[in-house]
Image 1: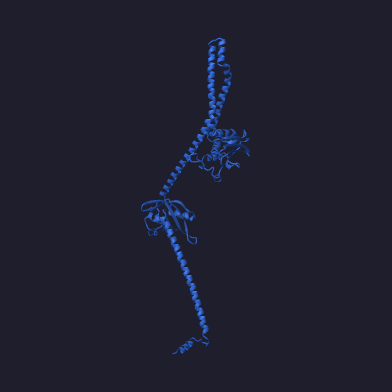
Image 2: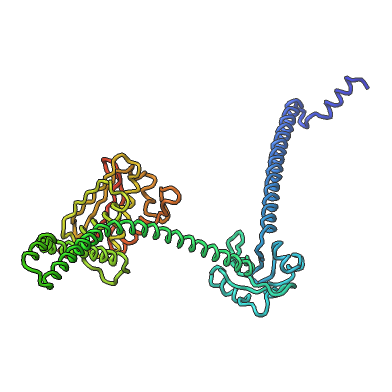
Length: 455
């Protein structure tokens, strides 16, 4: 058959029933196939994207599973997950080691099967806690293991499903032996810390005692030297009077007595003996006052507060510290007499000595060393201000200056307890202690105390 006859036959086979032309139908068929192919391409692309996303999620899930498995295997605490009936569903490696069984064996058991008969907390107790919607916190359980009883301290909670329904219990237990060792180590560390604190406090007390002794020694030196010198003078006067009275009792003639009286300077001795005794009495009274100040300084806190004059107390604290260490310092006190505060004078004396000592340390190496102490009454309180000419208080230290053991002094020169102790004492008296800088330079410590009635 010729090509022409074949084409005619094909055209007759593909002719439409109504005898219409075939060309439009062929064009529509091609467009339909093209649309189908495009849809197939889009669907395939979506399938590929979904496959990539699924593989990525599977990789993330695998990484999460590996991470969780690593966490569970590295845990030293025993982890047990069970359903609400107590049937074990999952355990970690530490639990398998403790019970010497794999998960496949443990999963056939219930939690109550693992508990010893004398366990302080039973499974019924755990269920009762869960029913009360409470967390299981520090409950002691005793597990029965091939190695013997294993007491553990357990914490746990309810496990929920994706819809928020309770489906099980998760328990994490740490062997009490490890906890006891940890508590023992913590107690030992705490004891060592307390010993170190006591040593630091003792060092601060010894440093304060050294400053106190230096100041008291300087204060006692003057009146004792005065008494000692007058005692020698009085001894000479006594020798003269004894020799003159011996001559009188011997019955020597009047001319000889007159000559001896002039030679021994009896008249001058009699005139000076009163002043000498007054000087000795004044020196002894000064020693008595210093001893009284020491007694007030060292006495314990009394249940009831007393009224005391703040001016002599401030002068005494200044003398004891400054004269014993830096007699060349320029000091000025402007506190009116009769300015009375309420509290424990010995403890406030200690506070004043600490503040003065802190001011002296702050002015070390400064070209001008001046300390001004002023006092006034304001709104039922006594306000004392101590201003030094040091470098002042740095901004980053202002909030920590009263913290225990905080100090800017070099090692060996301070423990950082002086201001902390002073702050606590002032608080116990119902007052305040504040630190700041003066506009013209230097630091200012402001001490506020309750004023005595009429003070």
